[in-house]
Image 1 (cartoon, one colour):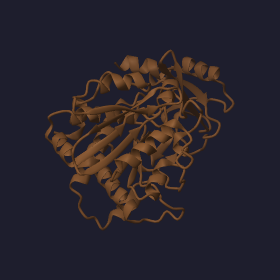
Image 2 (tube, one colour):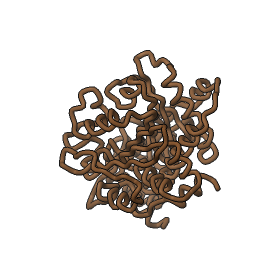
Image 3 (spheres, one colour):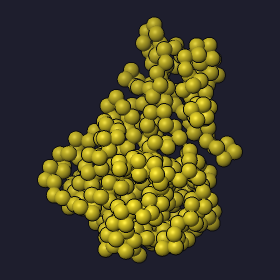
Image 4 (tube, rainbow, N blue to C red):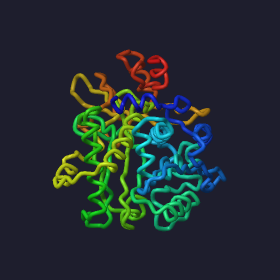
Length: 377
């Protein structure tokens, strides 16, 4: 059975879309079997519980956390799906639990999740708080790290729709973080690179040429760089855009596949003397996409439109905004439309153009991605 089919089998329908709260997470954690040890590891700024899950009795300890940025929910969905896979009688799941011990934080930033913000309730980016450890959520992450003493760590994030590799969207991106300013490759970083090479080889079957390599500039305040400096291999996942999948229901399955293939690799490591070359051959993702690009049919001038995700009544809406920073001759669009649109156009102008010309803009989400998704269902 293909891993994508396994991901389908364990997809938890109770959580979907872009908005995943603390309550959504706990409702599913309660359904895990008794041998999954669900604890309140600590509290957030607004006194919300931060849940952790311990399972497995293997010698190799794996530490995973997701949603340290509250508006990055795709890896949380994929991680919870993976928890239910581990709870199954699947032969691979049984093998993983026998070889690994897991400590998992499905949602580190419950306040940001509720508010749908990158930062926590104190407006602090938790991924820039590794040195000072000023926030309660950061303290929880580091305390569990110290107690658990992992052999490998997984830092799970989302990335915006602006990132691409070549002519395609960067649907999944990865990074072996640097441990110093020189971005040297030591044994610890090499372990992460080898893991990413193994994941990439599998993902090419599902998303050819849509896997990216994230920027490796060193910043010790970032959690991955900080843990790498402490000698613990830490892989960064960045779940991105798949064509038309603004709710990221396809990408969540690719997160599941990436987790599965990570464990399969760690279970059966093999020497690869060419790992560095293979790692560097993964293209670095770049900011090259707008959600929509209007192409003037007369002079070819391109105007970008980017969606802003807005929380209203516990639902995420995608509002169109003219992107004045990323309007480049080379800028690509997830949707490209022949239409003249002035660079100083307002949202009302965008709506006006789309209504006059019809084009497929309504169906493709310029006015409302939410309407499109309802149509597709």
